[in-house]
Image (cartoon, rainbow, N blue to C red):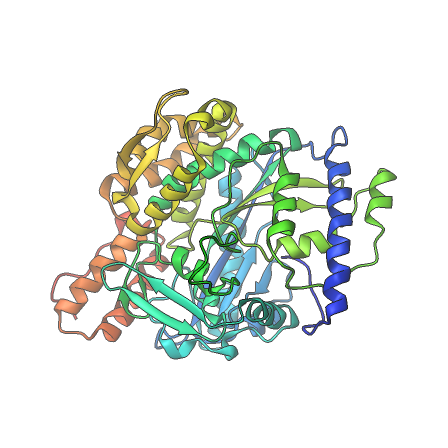
Length: 501
């Protein structure tokens, strides 16, 4: 969310005032976005990476806030889970060698986190769900002891008014309930921010909604949770259900959209409608008000902070969402939230290069494709990609005016590579830079080895060596961490032989 709060208890009057302020914020936002020249400037990208902290037994260790305090850097922050840690990068120009620039920032910050973790007997793991999680790891104590996260957890419980229910199908289905949203902390991601001008926002955002599913299919990295083999990217199912603030309504024939979801439809005009949607459809959780005259500031030609709107929108976790940033002269970004954490920096940047290149390539013609590609198909694609990975059957818009066709994710990904590369190069990305990361992506897809498939193969081999499921998961994670440290991308990793111990 990027905004600190200092309280975690609120009164009815706080919510009432906050809702009034949200409407004022929306009015100010529309004025700012309509202003000629707002948000124009050099195209940039940035990134955030969430990781887990584990002890010598590869079990989660709750020292995220402690490490963030020791680092004393705005680039290293605690997350909702006490055993999570997040790093952020500075934005870099999209033109040139942006991926290499992000890699160097991330490498240096990961190293700083590792040094502080090692001093406390801990290690850092970039993986989207920790394979060694056990049910006892999730309780109210899992939530980082800061006002922001205490208030988030309390707010979700206040709206839910019932236990949180998690039900995931897969090879070994899982069903459980929890009295708190602590399992939100089971998920970590690699998020990319793409700066977008107001006039290009709708095209870029809609292209992102189309491209997210295929990119995710090749990036999956969480095939287990609590010892169960589930989806290739189980994080998608866990995160949505662990933070679902909607009260159960078994007899109802409709429900409000989930607070954590893929979205409700194509963007028609621009970013403002997405902010309006989040205000209209989702109750406030953190009703902390500022004292800025947002409308007066906007009318005077200033750049309002929009504290309340940014705070509220940060508690609606769609897989792609807009960001309003008042820094400097202000701008908009698209936050691409679906890609998982791990395995290596090169793997994550390869995923990011494919997703960004696909968005940039698709955006100019997206308006011609959408009339024959219903939004429900993009939603379907997203969840199929998370469930089945490279083997997912995706529905794809072939050409404008033609019916979509069904294609296996692996085949689609390879067929789109030339357009993806063209999208990056046309946007100014150095050709050698684009090819370097896209070759890593292509090799992974061609060999069919994602982080998820590697984990599943390693787990099967270790279990054939008579290891218990718990011990096999621990050994698999140790091997995973060793391979991450080697720096080789996941498609080049070796896997334990069948019967290994």
